[in-house]
Image (cartoon, rainbow, N blue to C red; front, side, top):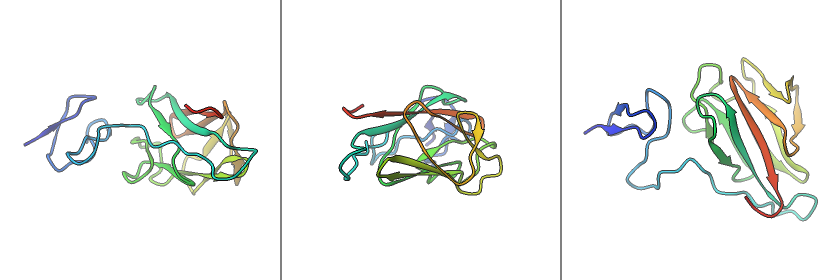
Length: 150
């Protein structure tokens, strides 16, 4: 029995986890169909005690929101990535965001096309600030932080 993708309507195999046409995650019987990850709440005291999310502002997943969960969030084309971006311009393991005392630190993990913050290619680690634009391949993601919740 084929599973129909809720985004593009493509008929996928019944054991598929992701649509082979558009790359969206397919709902599984044992999980709720969602694209949003659990919010992160810093265990450290100030200066950072809010939650953060990435909002896709360009690319075929435009409008999708990903709450950053845990101390380490992976972004890439690999299906096990926390933020899965299925496009050839994105490396399988492209970038990592790690929670630090000042917020999330972004680090490129050897991607072919590089990672950009506000239009500039990063080299090493960069602390993300609310409103920063993270570019991974052809995707642009807006980094939003809230101290009162999302």
